[in-house]
Image (cartoon, rainbow over all chains, first blue to last red; front, side, top):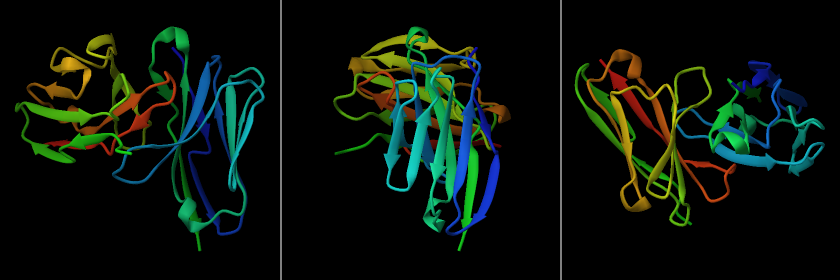
Length: 112
Length: 112
């Protein structure tokens, strides 16, 4: 059973601060996705990383996949209130069908 | 570009009643997934279709749950004899590439 642990579970920061969210597992994943979810809505795909050591940037968001493909991080620079939401990491293993295994999420609140 | 749609968005039912949810995937996507999400948790995989074939089911999908995808287009998820523990957000996702799943807005089920 693949498990993904996210930390921190809750994060409350002031506008303009930087933050990093971590997603760790003892299992190797074929790919890892990051999603953002608003209350009462479905998760929205932010990025997919597939290669160990891969770094992807999406404006102020930087995503990294660990060299061993067991962990990932999301770094937000100069956070804004619009970044508030639940950030979820999800891993996929090609040999276990197509299911995504999700972490429990990091609830981010950016205060103006 | 039409995203994944789900209906209804909210459903309130009494314990013991049957409910059915519908998911319309992105038109060219051949893979369709159902997940369940409870408060404070990440989504949990329920089942997966490739075209009309149901290829994988989670242990979470008890005998009271059934899913179909006739003709490989829309999908339905039925819960028979609902229990209070079934209260959750039911999410549908579709994909063309195995690991990039795009989610609908979800159906919030409340069993009273």
